[in-house]
Image (cartoon, rainbow, N blue to C red; front, side, top):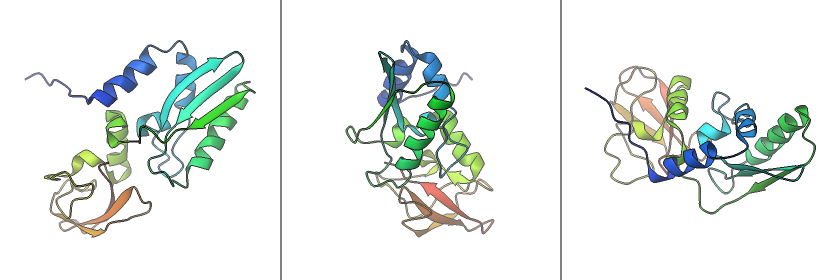
Length: 179
C-alpha cells in the first residue's frame, strides 16, 4: 500500500518559500544552526527559521520564537551571526517576528523524528488530544512506544514542553506541546 504523506497548509507554504528562494546556499548553511535546548534539531526543522534573503551585501534572517518569552532566542540569534560571520558574511540583519505566531505545524517531519529519537515526544505522538495543547495521558513514550503514559506536570524543561512518565517502562520524558 502506498503511503501518501499529508502536510498542513503552513508546512507546504514554508517548504515552497525555501524551495523557490534564490538563496538556497544560505538556507542550507543555516541548517547548521541548532536549537540550543535540543541540539539535534535545526532551527529550520523546529520551524523557528522563517525566511532568508539578501538585500545588497546584507543577509536578512527572520526567526519566530516557539513562545514570545523563549529564553533561547538570544542564543539562536548569536549562533546565526557566528555561523554567517565564519563564512565571510559580515552584514547581517536578524528579525524576530511574533506574527503569525509559531505553530507546531511548522515543524518538519524530519524534526519530529529527531525529537522522538532524542527522547522527546513530538506533538503528533499524543493520542486523542481533543484540541488541547497538552493531553493528560496517552502520549506515546519515545523510549518504549507505549501509550500507557500520564502527565506529571504541565511544564517540563521548557515552557513549550510538558513532563510525562511512562507507566510501562517507568521512564520520564518531555512532550512537545501541540500549539
